[in-house]
Each structure stands twice: as C-alpha cells, then as structure tokens.
Amino acid sequence: MTVDEWHKHNATQKIYAFVGKKISMESYDPPKKDEYRVNKSGDSVKVKYIKFDQGFKLKYKVIQNIHNEIKTDTIEFIAFDHYGIPPFSKYEHVLLFMTKEKEQFVHCKYQYFGLYKTESGRWAGIYDKSKYRKTRIQPIQIDFLEDVSVTLNDYLKKHRYFLYPKKYFEHFPDKVVTSYGNYVEDLFIIKKEGVLRARGYFE
Image 1 (tube, rainbow, N blue to C red):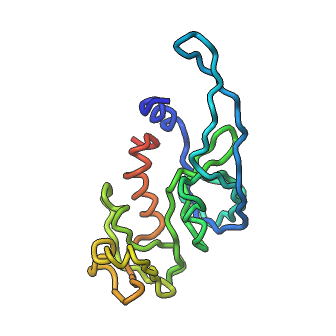
Image 2: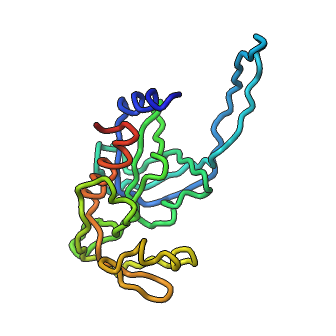
Image 3: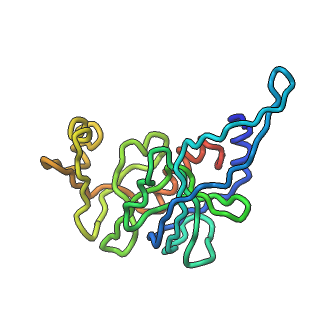
C-alpha cells in the first residue's frame, strides 16, 4: 500500500478516543496468510512472512468517551509495538485512540496520553514537549490530585532541560515534577491537529 492509498483508507475510518483502565493484556500473533508474487522469470514465489512488530490483545475498562462513542463499558483491542510492550500499558489511566477494522478495534500505533485525576474530578495529562509541535493548544496549570513526576534514566538526565523545560518542570536529581499539562479534551485536539491529521484521519 502506498502512502496515498494509506491516507485514503484512513480518511474513511472513524477515530475512537476514550479514557481507559487496563483489565488484561496478553501476547497476540495475527494469523499468517500465504502470499505469492510473480518474479521476473514469471514464476510464482511464496513471500516469506517477517514479523516487525510485537502484537498484544488487550482489554480495558471504558471510563469516559472523548470522541465517538464506544457503547460498551469494556473494550477489547489489538495493539502493535516495534519496541516490545506498549508503553501506554504502564499507566493506570490513559487516553487511547482506536480505529475499527472488520469489527475489530485496533490501537492507533503509539498514540496515547497517560492521565491523572485532578482536584476538580477531571482527567488531565502532563506537558510533553514533543506532542505540541503542530497544535494551537498550549499547556496550562492543572490542579492534579497528587504530585505528578517523571523518573529520569541516564538518557533523560542528560537531556533533562531540553525535554523538561524549567518553565514547566521542577527539577530534582532523579526526577522532574510538574503541574502543567492539559485536560483530556484538549489532549484529543493535540492528536487530532498533529499525528492523526498527518496520517489522514482528519482534514
């Protein structure tokens, strides 16, 4: 499939976005289909299947619909990740983005926001510099219910002031703490105006 074909396909798909909580996760191997192509000699040659991504089947509780409605209180979906276990699965609560292929929900690869409850009872995520490149949304101060921090590994420590600007983060030796971010409705707009638009889901 060419990039243009991929964008045209995506333009026909609905995006579902919801606040969820993990119930279960297990490894998933998609069914392998034999594929044959004709080589330069005119012979039919079987194409070898190579797995680039690790697959997972997940079940999540649907806490709040954000864009389009998932009509059940739980959802089962497939996710693929080139690097192993999907990073969104480490969060207790998360904003996830889905499409639906032949009645099967499929996670939009790498698209999520970790979420935290606020004093006002709403959901919000913390500021992530890399997510704000193509959006009109700006981070605001959030009344998170508890302190929200990011633990720093050696790489993050080396680049801490670039990744976590002092304007938005308080710096400690092994972590950064922030009260800046956006509520879940604006987090959806950030993805809509950025990655999801670039992939052809929105104009």
